[in-house]
Length: 315
Ligand code: KDG
Image (cartoon, rainbow, N blue to C red; front, side):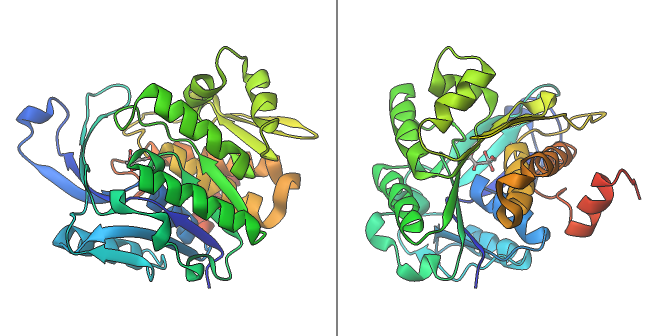
């Protein structure tokens, strides 16, 4: 049985070996990525039992995603293969500064065909937490309704739900994104936007005002990820600021938010809001680690390593 369930699209990721314009990149390293499966891998490495649900093409790239996630100990029993639509692909372009550019090849992918009628009771069986993001709702109307319905059913079963809006502007219009993401916030217990996403959704508000604005929509915990400035958590009784983990060089920021989510949830799930401060610290540590490696999740630690790092020991 799974403790945590997550649902969303994963893609094959192709990363150029060199920095510079993608048009002139001759060689690529192949990996697998997707916000929800990144969180699944992060949690699995920290010792939680995680189930990942999606649709994949009945193609070699679908095979690669299945074997990668299974190899990471993630339960993929309900990842369906679609005979008519492909597994999605995306490319990163490293500029040598700032966030990499990303190029998606995911229109009409298998996962964009997710529909509420695909949902099975077994998906949530025995689980106590659901993690979803705002990427899958951007793929298609059916995918958006699937995410909304899964959130609703999880809450009905008494599970807790975390939601990372993960705004991806390339995938939909601002209006559609704002309306859909705002409408999903009341269906979650933990809302975890980055600072830019919070501003996009809450308008002209300070960090503190964003916290109370989102709490007012229903979640009992709100976590604002401030990137290099750490994170800040809000619940009914407290506001907790967590200092960032300093890193000497940032190699790849993509996946840092997912690593944060895995770190945060790994302690929030067993301990609840009494552990807000230590959950934020774990989130920050995991997020910082993710920026140290190319690839979204390759650098994520196992539990022992994370504990050692949190205790301040290097090796
Ligand atoms: O959070 C990391 C994701 O952005 C990356 O893995 C790709 O899922 C992805 C997306 O849609 O951007």
